[in-house]
Length: 69
Image (cartoon, rainbow, N blue to C red; front, side, top):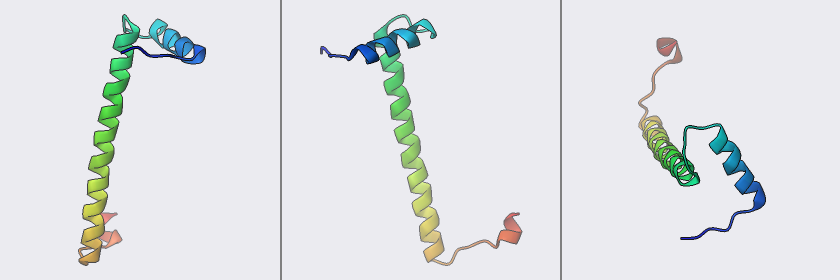
């Protein structure tokens, strides 16, 4: 695959490479993609927890704030 990058993006990659342990743009981009995947997974986990909490509210499964705090 070949990519066309703007000069600004190329400069950003060069700047990040200079300040990172990565040896190539490929390594840097792969690390960024891994972080995006982790972020997406974490967002899905949080959404699931929110859905569980919302369902518990609908079911009346609430805890008094004085018990929590």
